[in-house]
Length: 260
Length: 365
Image (cartoon, rainbow over all chains, first blue to last red; front, side, top):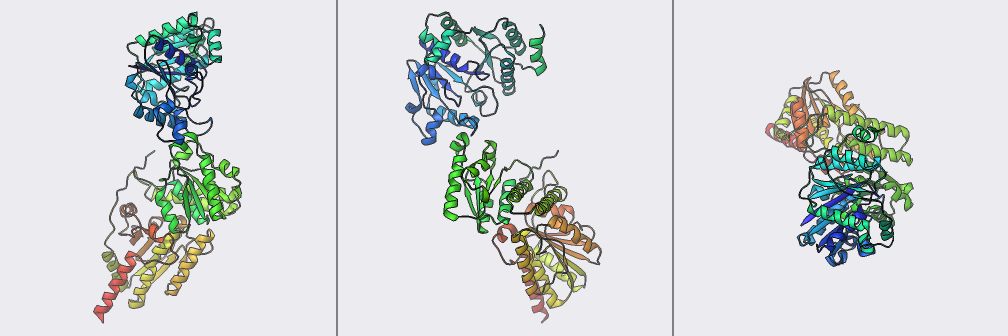
């Protein structure tokens, strides 16, 4: 069994990549569990084709919901959304702790070949860090683009992982801009993490998202689908991760200014 | 900055007691049901109805303002209180609950004091000051009264940090001195015609217990004579109506027992500065033994003359011993005993003195 947590700046494409990787691995015969950890509860929408009831919403009504109430399947993929509060109220971190604990008490995750935790944005508090802090995921994949704020967020994640002494498997470079690779390569070197793969901007992904499906399901033979399938296999074959370094704000700025 | 390692009073509890002093009929703790259970039970003895929103993980995750509104609506319907206090707790404040917004949404703003405190804010007096600030905004107390009380609370904090149980990183618990030994010391001093000062420097309702030593001393005086000066922070014209009334009741009861106060040093909420006045009075007299009840460490005369300190709490006892008071009596559970009391309650040392004087009278007759 292998387990990964996907982190990255909000809106960077974590959920899209998580659902596509889950789909790709399920198609080679693996039993995959995709756990959405974002309060928005939209990580699994492209697999199931609709929103599924979040675990915490069910627990609000019934403290002990049965697995079939919150676990939804498409072939080899099982999907769960932890859920959480509305924006601006409550505590998402506490929600994640409570939801994950309930899940692990009631579901034997060893029955799965591959588990993906799609985690909200940064490691902003102890609660949101629970997935890696408690080692529910063996390692982290950081999704980033090549703009300053995405790299800034990726660096914050590296800092959190470094503090928590948690392994990262590498970086997924999403939606590269022209010449952006040099920034990501510099960042990757400085934080000592490999670039696992590069996912180009794709109209097919946008179209598949619109109809709540993975791009691999809608365009199975497209170039983008082949790239994601290949990246998924790379992730599957990663043997070990490493604790990343992190950069000061000046060092991040240097990444962009060195060539200006 | 040194960290106090022993548990300290909580701003939440301080806020609740201040709400009681303002005559809030109902206090709602917005938090898990176990929060401040101890003070809540004690306040109920004092006639305050204390409720909890009983937040559970569901509300901590999704927010508990709806729960707060429901609890407030229900309480308002059931009890029609004139004044309600809503007090935060660690859990509700950490998740960012907006107490005022919830109160506004159910139109209870005009009779509700919201207090955004939790136990991690530092000094407990912060909770009391926060309540007073909101009470002033609601027009319950004047700006002048707010400033006076705020000053007193800041002085109380300063006192605790310089001479109280917040002055050292760790203060161990310590047993009381033997009340019989202390009673003997007092009676012996009176017999030897030494000038004695009995100082009541008490905090609010605890005066109902600590004032008893004055009555006990008067009883000795009536039997065997002696020179005793009575000093007390029992000004019935200072403080909130409830606190003034405590002074009034105690003064009347003391008067009935023949105790006339020679010097009034301030109100019952002025113990941090009333102690300074008491000290001046003693040092400008020929007092040879000072018996100080309530908050003795506010009367800094240890080492100057012989002192007997009467306090409550084994950590406070330990603190007074280490400051250098000659004898320290622990009137166990003074606060617990006096909550809800409207009469002077007999004390351990007072009763020991009475027993001893009866024996002396029997032996000499």
